[in-house]
Image (cartoon, rainbow, N blue to C red; front, side):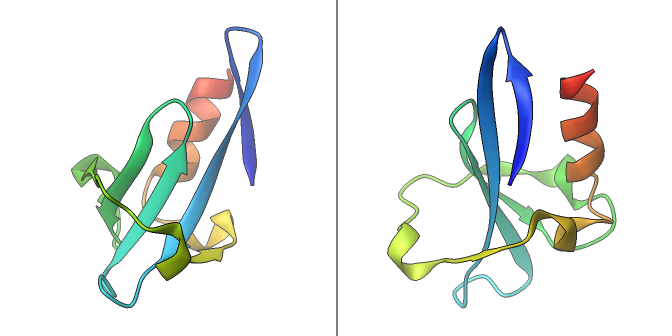
Amino acid sequence: MAYFSNQGMASAILLYRSSAHPQHWIAWSDRSGWLLFPAKFNGWQERQPYPGANPAKLQQVPLWLSFNTGLLEAIMMRAA
């Protein structure tokens, strides 16, 4: 779980996988809601809203697995 400051409040970004979208990551944060993005280099730049996500059908995975997508860099930029 990654934490970053959001105007004095802590927010978390959670990363998930789904068998329905094997070539994508699914991320959740209270700031952005559910987002779907390709599991590829710089995939975070292609993120899109993912309404109607069902957490019961998702598998939470460690955030570091998205290391080459640009998500971790975006988190670091927000924290700065």
